[in-house]
Image 1 (cartoon, one colour):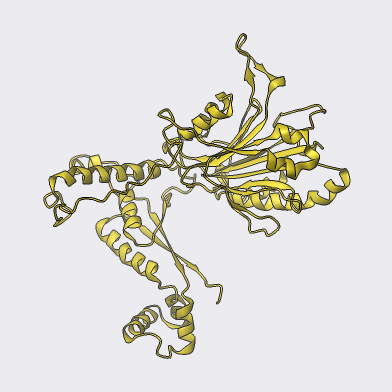
Image 2: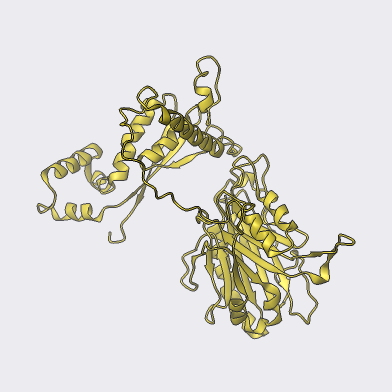
Length: 463
């Protein structure tokens, strides 16, 4: 899982630069901190020594983080697209790309952004749950010479993703198979998957805030206006055209920002969101007496087994190979957002269970669990304070609650005891109650596993 931050701005006269530089630095620093996914500093692999704000993130992680600056002078000046160019150089257009990585897959840490031959990729996505896939997609995007090829490459990705890709767009000489550097066309591509399963926020430059920002998360700053990036297609920003008229950065930006489709046709599998099947099942379906194989009608037995196998395999791929930080062996590597509903309970059960294919032979062989039995699993249960309960406690109820509800509330307060209990009782919302109930069910079904029920309490703004 990765945090992405990208900024693009224009330099004008020196006096204006000195006045706005501090504001830009503050905004960038806050957003980089917010995008630094928490990791373990002991396995941190790289810090950009030229950027002191990255070192500020080091004590709390992430596993790896890096940043690169690209200077794009005006057309009539000497042009450079070398990502190693320092951000201090006074060029017309300044592109800054930052990525942090919390390693959840693969055998070796990967440092982002991916950089090669002037191209830069910040990737937060999942193609293969068993490995780091940013390098794979980077190689394919670099090989795509035109926007159509890039859109088709992205359109064939099924999993969740958000990315920012700076492409110098070298045109290959067919006779000598070389890259003509003088014909490079610089573009910035950025997008989310069609279902929006990865966050990417956008702030388009305005006359008041003439800076372009992309960020996985917001830092809660009111000086810029973030909105979720649309999932309608792939956004393409023509940086060459912006360099031609850097003095009118805001207007040029908006006139050279386009959206292209992810591709279509049989060779593009996931370019469009598939439509929901709206047909209703027939009325004469057989009645189901139970969910065991003996009670299910034969047509449903195979379908049920396939569903269970697919769910089990999906959970296995996501939790089995999460790396353990050195020195933290035996601690939980997996946390499940746990409301006690059927979905989160099933996910927790599958994370504990044997692989489906191994269940039948588990009595004879030592089957491999998705997560070792001696390793705990964290269940994160979020409860939002109920202001109505708080007010009732302050007002003495005044008959607002029925007798049964008042009795339940008194039981909760008695179980916990005193003022602290009354405070806790305001968080005994349905998700907390069902979470505690299903915690006991998991302990019954999964003996030997330690389940850490982590109670997260979110206070009401009114209190």
